[in-house]
Image 1 (cartoon, rainbow, N blue to C red):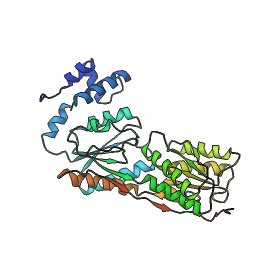
Image 2: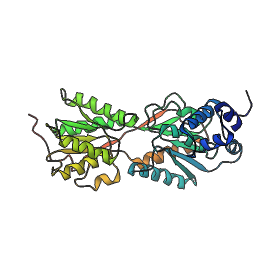
Image 3: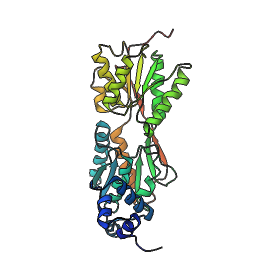
Image 4: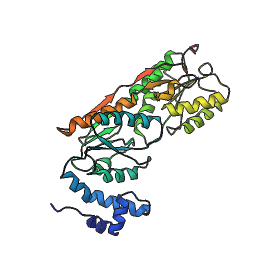
Length: 337
């Protein structure tokens, strides 16, 4: 029971060579997908820790923090990393950054590759099902989760109140007199998107009883927002307001409406979520739910650093966003009749 698990044990269980295990665990591409899955499953089952990690864990601190994100592209992630980096520099810490490009199966590879090389980890896993995350982190790993739906594992979590933010936006639009409010949703397997959609539906029932939800598919990027905008333009009865689940999709909608000659907000209002820096500089400036993204990242690292020398926080802390009303929804009050 007390024996140290070696790479040979993983190779034996996965029925592959030691070299194949090494390539799979280090994320190299020359491994067949089925073989990679078999190796990762075996490593997880055996709770394998690479030898370099075992050495590092028993020696001095690395002064390095691991940051594992679903993507590195876009203003949200650049702002998040900016906030984390500012705090890291304040505390003389280095960052080791990895992205799994939105592929859940690559998340475990990134986490295991960091074990023992870092003193703690900041992890964002936005998938609705994040059950494998606890095993991939490993026992005794200091970690703080960001916007990650994972309960009962004893890890501190910082999360945006997505439901409350979406509810506030629908309430704002209803107060402005908009009655047909469409929603551009995010990816179906994304927890943030799920909570924002739930907030939209709940608020619609609360503030506009009897109004039919109008939900369009999106993927948290400009192109899907633009596609949703074109789908709205083709509707026989067009909504008078569009609430996109993030700002990038809202900007895609804005572009589609500008191309079609619609005036925003006179012909149709547009709102988003996140308050990325670009939101205030487009025309018209974008009404949105503001999340201090950089501060979210900085707070996550402060929480991790504060907890390394004592017990890690075990609770989920909700970060309350707030409404920022700008020109894309102002001055277009509709007749409520």
